[in-house]
Image (tube, rainbow over all chains, first blue to last red; front, side, top):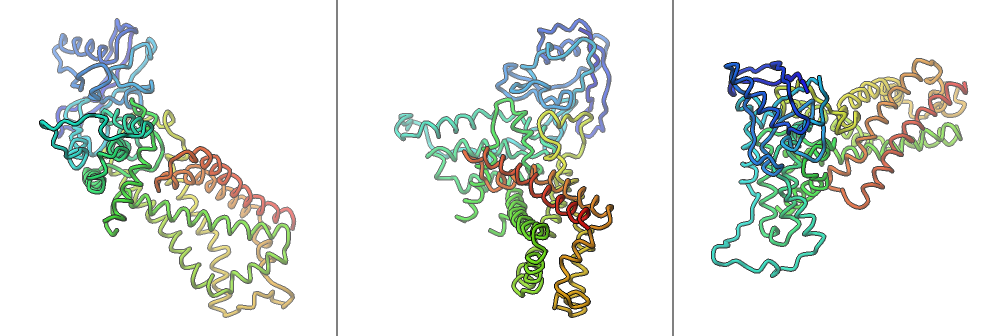
Length: 248
Length: 225
């Protein structure tokens, strides 16, 4: 198939950036979206140009690196997938595809389609962990009985890969689904209770410091999340934050 | 708790709590107004009670005014902060793919409700304050002294069709605002559980029935002159 690509080109964080049009042909519908981008880059290199910079690592929907906003949606038009899992069969011959980086003040553009999502790392570092010394003291996994329902919900929350699609899709660029998932995966388990108060307070404080917007419950994040993280995680975050502030 | 309300989540709680208060007030306002359709005497009696009772006038009314102003001011502040969270806008943004128009445009429906409220205050609230607290007439009686004035004033206001149309548009925006706002307020205070589905259904019914009821009252008095 032949396609017209409108791609955001930005040569570094200080560059103003602009949309640039490209034509690509001989694209197979079996290609993944990133393979199509590889074809485009080969074409650009052969023509003596600068290839389009974009993030990718595992190419199997686990690493959460491929942060592209395609035709107005993070990770493209299909639901429950990352960009690397998007295939060209989702498009038609002759289509025009708009490709932009995830847009948020807290996700500054590094180059072209690559954004700096280290704000997520800093939120994690603020409290998204359990302080347990496991060196030489590994306990049996079943030494603390955990309710199956709670374990399942914690696992669901823990499937968040931190790709940033929630921020990209939110009209307010809010990170509350990400933070909600990271708080929930510990709040639902007994191991997470010891540091629960400090965890949620510190993570929310860091989230606000990074410049993410306020959640207005549009639900766009839940729909666009490639791992199906639900809005229940944001409600739990709100409850945990309230409880933590009441406790002091 | 002082830091709580300076945080993004604390502001969500504050918006939700003021929304709960306003949604309860709207039900009370509707319950009184619908009496004007069924019993002008009962409407006059309760209007006079509400208009002259010190607890209502000097206790609840200032709280209501604070609630209204707070909800609007905080709403606009949050909107500005949220817009600043995305400095460079998307060339293409397909919001319809993942969210409702109502949820993405609360600031617009809220803004139109604010315009409507200003008109509503000019129509009813300011004249009422003028009569009672500036002119000092707390009797609630008509100029000729023959019965209470409240029902007469209400029906008189809805005589011009342009005012009825204006009120209908105002209530349509209220319905659009509540279609997202009702369930959103519960989500903001952390209420997302097995009752959420039922709550959303109740919220949709509330968002349609209450504004539709207000529209019915305006139309009833216009065509029943």
